Amino acid sequence: MKKALNSLRMLLNHPSLAWMRNRYVLSGVLFLIWMLFLDTHSLKIHYKLYKEIRQTRKAIEFYKSEIEKDKKLIEQLESNPDMLERFAREQYYFKKPTEAIFIVELEE
Image 1 (spheres, rainbow, N blue to C red):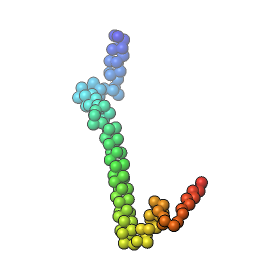
Image 2: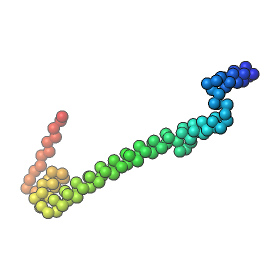
Image 3: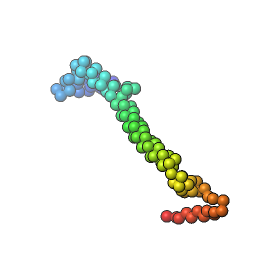
Image 4: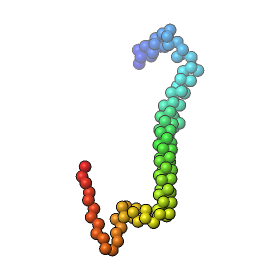
């Protein structure tokens, strides 16, 4: 135990590590390490939250553009009955009573 303390004292007395003897510098460094890596408001947590916010904003923009596309489609379907019929046939496989529908799926 005394050997370890002596080697630590020798290390701290080295000229290049003399700044570590100043308790204010040491406490400041420890405080920075605590705040940057160990605290609940650390940089790691802030970065995770930043990424989550960025992904959420991208999702918002995507859904806004999808809403605009759907609004345009609804306007077209409400104004044009032929397009409404075509949409119903393509998307929901609607048919007239005298027709038969055959669905062909191609494998890629």
